[in-house]
Image (spheres, helix red, strand yellow):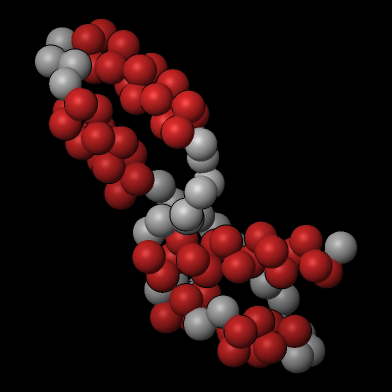
Length: 94
């Protein structure tokens, strides 16, 4: 269980640090996503170009909010902050 948790935290750290997770989706899945976005663009009355599709996806990415909850009790959070610095550097902590 701990290994799986660290794997997920590692992916979140990468996403926070760079805005991208390499190899998250396959090329086939990317094509499927772009195709479905093009359908949505036509419904919205926009031209369904590749550039407009990526602009729409980028707009969604900017609007995405992620909430992470960690217990501040004990040393676990401190250890994770050292291993995954983007959890502190690229977030707002409340």
